[in-house]
Image 1 (spheres, rainbow, N blue to C red):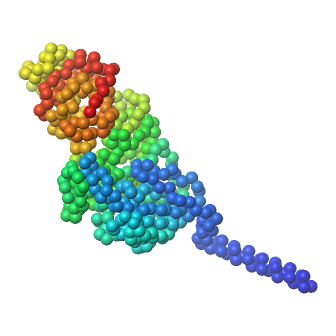
Image 2 (cartoon, one colour; image 1 turned 30 degrees about the horizontal axis):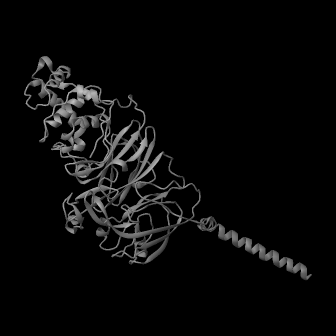
Image 3 (cartoon, helix red, strand yellow; image 1 turned 90 degrees about the vertical axis):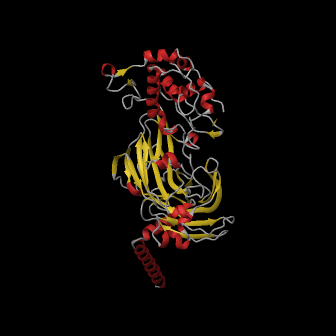
Length: 497
């Protein structure tokens, strides 16, 4: 009898436990909590720009631990220009963080003992007071920890929100966090991280030495530098983004501000898809330029069909060519002449007043120029036409980088104006137009380390454009003929410093 009662008691208790467990399991949100508990934890995937962590392959949410250090460092802003950046992780922008919708994030913000300022973090992906700023105020040499669940997928900006907030952002404290949707974004061949921002220096653009932050310029929204990924030239030359024809590229683009709206554009490409304002739904196709607000983001995708150099710019265009908001995508691979032919013909246009011969080819004119030697005393119509033809080529091929006055862009593109490098060696100049240039050079005492791709001009065009350049801006007046170009084509003249 006692044994039967004991059995009944055990069964009753077991039934009660089963019912209780079932009630807990089916309570709203408890299944998710239990799932996280049994799935363990992992450390967040963090990378420096322009690189992006690999996509998250797991199908369930988990606990993700983020360790991020704020540190104040003095580094290059432009060639010869230094600045004391306040950073997340020692670089500008801060590290790219990748998590998944539903993850429980444990965030550890460490402030370096070497810091002079307290810092915190406001993540736009956080639902909670200050985006985490209220819980993460951290003095130098301390660590703050807080947790949050990422509820909304998308691409979000994070930044420091310690007073004065504008100064902390202007000094470099921003980055991106991607919250992947439950169903991952479609796969692409390459993903890259680009963030635009402004710097407000006491000195003018290009003034050398350590530059200090200018509160007046920041308040008046008048930056000396507008850049991608923290410095002038961060995405050009050997730092360019690389891809191959036929590949798809996804750019995660943020705008740290603190003030300006970005008009982001890739010269020579069209955005096949745009996830506007960093959301997870494609809201536009076939877009030329997309707006990214300060403190906002966008995701763009496109396929590269033909090889060449594609220029990234803020299409508020003086920011690109005069303040630094310029980058490059170097695409290698086979040409597709059906998509893009390159220049097929270039004739001289002499104006409607010459009705009998509105267009003339260069053959006879270049033959006359070939006989003129190195003299700059040619005043006949022939050499003038060649220079006019060369000027047209310069405008369509060279002007964007070397500028209308031949002065180039400081720290990015070398000058042709009174260029000692150009005037020292005519054969070297011809070779560079034929073969391109991929090594450091020194022009008028300043160092440049970009990439100039081959021009794809024919012999007549190279002769004409160099003759034009040599005739301008205080240069030597040399004349280049197509026979000289033909002799050098196929050979490689080393471009020395």
